[in-house]
Length: 226
Image (cartoon, rainbow, N blue to C red; front, side):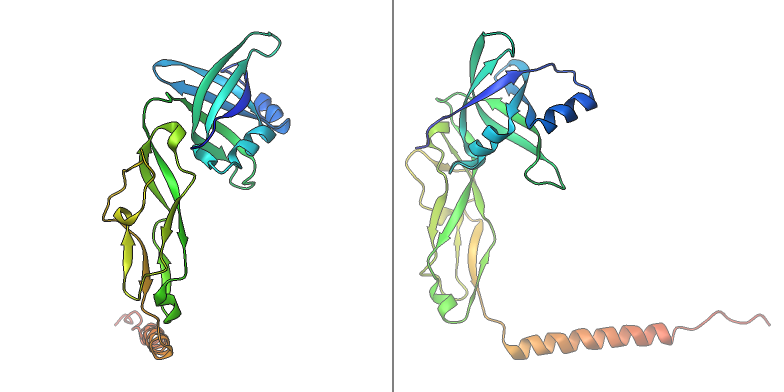
């Protein structure tokens, strides 16, 4: 069971110019908005360094945050229990966070979240030359915010060539319910590809390319005027 993380947030104006936003971001302040539970949205700033430390915990983006809100120069404060709904990142600088959406939660109400799956063990099929194909790396589950698992472990050591495991094969902690399609294939062991098959595919691709080049060369030109 994960523990709540405490984070400071400073209330801000909901109307900031592009120049003001850029200035605050240069100071490593991340604009964020708290919303949900039929309350008014609250625009805030988060300290970039502290927020990245929160993301680096084992809970990752599923961390439960006790947010302490301050009014900047005022000594008054308030508290909100939130989770991360969405993070907007700079497409050029992945570590640069542009905006965060935080959603108010109740610790007594279940939520649907995506949890990573950790595949452990060396499959029997791999020892025989097969290849592991991971199709899904996280699944959707439902549970109380304080019971969200950091990850779900799936033992694949008994898998042989041609076999697979589905979502219903996951072992879930008490209080955690599967929201994913139970028949969704998560991981499978593929039949090894032989050198002859690879060579055959390469020859077939080469023949197709040669045929295409021949068709382009032999394509008829425009008829001359009589």
